Length: 207
Length: 282
Image (tube, rainbow over all chains, first blue to last red; front, side):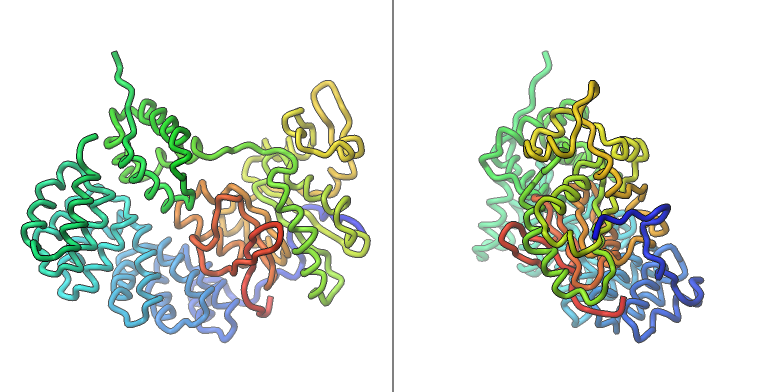
């Protein structure tokens, strides 16, 4: 036995893939009984801006984790309004893993998520508001601090404000100082807010 | 006179948390000097005046150029033979025996090493298989090593190395596999013929599609240079490139668990590696 070196290709010869790889063909394959076929279809649809709706439909019922991951990555690559709206809808899902997957996906899409973030942060559902703050955690967007300041100035729920303060501890600047002081007053009877706001103020204090 | 920036303890904590989330690399307090020195260097070179401005640039710069520059500075990016040798021990003592035990056909064992850089890793794998793995007598092996840079691939194929590059090669292997030349150390033709070098852009689906049916992938110290989405895409590429049950080895500071849930952690005696879960039709 020995080392084998193939010429001109790094691939084995049985890599022929069946069926049409166009839009319609790939959409059909999303419903294949075979997980590998569905995963490859989802991968190939990453470059197809018309595929968002079909990918989102599949995501709702897809049970194979490897296919779900690829669907989400393809939606992130497409990132059109339909894909973003679909990810936002996932935040309202009862399926915790789907929600978390949507949060992770949205974190990577600052330019696309930015325009809808203000609305998400005043959503009637407090869970959605908290998930939106979770998205901000890694969202590379210049308005993150001002969005968080809006939250701690007016959100009525301690859990929402607490989540926002935790993040301000990392991203806050001197501009957050007054907002954090106001929050301490607004939730004077909440020990966690007192602790979290004090920590954030210490972190943002000038060196 | 220009004032040198300073990094406070709270600045360090902020940076530590941020950098960990972005790269999976956590600098403990013992690394303060190392981190501070590099942060101050980048603060100066990026045109920012202090940590606060620089941290804002890091967080909000849309294309991530500065974060990339900082990652490059914070990570040691050099290649040499037998780098992180314990992973090659893991390959021959644990991974290959497991692969051989479950292999039902005579197909060769396939190993993909990327980025190839100047070839040290791929040639190290070949040497380890010959010298440390008795199974090489009974099994065919393909070693494919890929890089996006055609210049570095030409260097890899040429197989000529500096003294620094071969510093960790055991003396017996040096005598057996290298010849001293005026320009450096020439690796022998048998090893050069053992590895196929190919150009591939890991982020290009058309490039990576043919790369399938691998039993082992070495991808060390590459993913830390990618953004989150590209990392996820790379993980999915590796998933499809591996046979079910195949293994992937990352750099010591990298963690697949923070990128994707597609792989299971396997703790072997010599190293922690990741394994493609499930068995399905290939």
